Figure 1 (cartoon, rainbow, N blue to C red):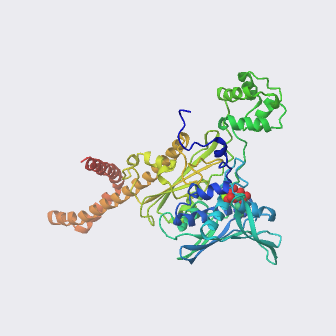
Figure 2: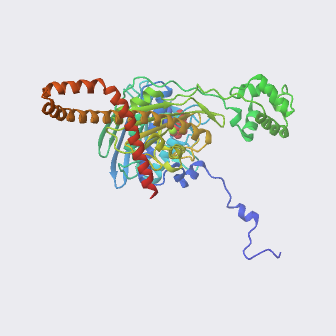
Length: 538
Ligand SMILES: Nc1ncnc2c1ncn2[C@@H]1O[C@H](COP(=O)(O)OP(=O)(O)O)[C@@H](O)[C@H]1O
Ligand SMILES: [Mg+2]
């Protein structure tokens, strides 16, 4: 044939090289997708996966978390990491699955505010360890029945299952929880995106936890200051607004509902009979027929119809925000600021998922520079700052309007803490480092930051006013003495007496001076601001 060139291969020959890939093999090759792209970050991710799971498990079992993390250098760029919690533990038969299979977990199939979601975290940490050092992990788990199950295992990457090397049941120790020991490649640094910084931010956002970190540079104790857990989040069914064709079809085919109308009302959030009937009517489908009898060509009509009827928003009381008190408590205990402003927005919805934004701004005292702390479901996000909806929203704020010195972000010594909680946080990638910029989310973040900025600005103008006022009073006092002396020379009256009279007038009229001072102070800030603006233009 004319279009053939030398070395042509047939489809049969090509078929010999085609084969499936296990999920473990995929992530072994693509570990950067989960954030394992450098040795410094690797240590952080392993600690983060362990600690996030520990906090999730404790909160779900309603236990105040006590978490212990130890990290020691055991060779060149080789670290041993131990993470222990006092959670409910993991039952024996599930231990190999949790640590030995990627995409195994309890959180993927439900819509509920959790830290984890995909069932990838801890098994990928196991895989990274064995990949970089060849060492298995050791797991100890007890559910509080006096038995401790000890496993040493690796992952059989080809088959995505655990390869158990040692297994025993120990008795004689009463405890509950999980302890994992990894040996992996890494580099320990204490900089902006370090293990220590992650633990510190975790302590701020989870002030109901005790966290101890014994690291290469010493022991750090992050103490619990609140003795109750935040309210328990609730699991909700999906909202039809966020369900696309493929998922709708799968749900319809798997449902045990007897009619299409009852499928709609039972499997979706906040979808009542009237709406279900209306959807069927718009789609031209009898709502009473069995879901099994819906023909493939009609599924699309149903999905389209859901977009044409008026839907009720999903419930929003299912989330577990931190609330003003916890945000304030966390910022106070770890940052020791001069002033804290907090804002909790009401829940909102993106793609059918409820979410809520909370902001805290801590100003001054021990804080020396501007910093953003980003959190999703109480987990600090340390990487991909520029890609995150939180950073982008912060940069779109007109900070100068609130009298902050700023170009894109303020230069004041303050920490901007932004927490978004949701039943499903839209991360930009599997490594869960940044939040996607949905307009609904950006808008809520901006409104929350603006409100908090306003509070800080009011506080600061109060302080500036008070300082200005004190300065003015000092000037009056200084001149009163000199004026009294001059008047004594002129009139022969006693200078002391004149001074007393002047003091009386000053204190009586200090209210008026104060008002004058306020206007002047404001005038003064405005002037400096204008000056700066002018300066920048040059
Ligand atoms: N420390 C722990 N205590 C109790 N259960 C745990 C612990 N760590 C992990 N698990 C269980 O193992 C599952 C898998 O964990 P992981 O791979 O991190 O996935 P994810 O957290 O995304 O669900 C979790 O969903 C949870 O059910
Ligand atoms: Mg996890």
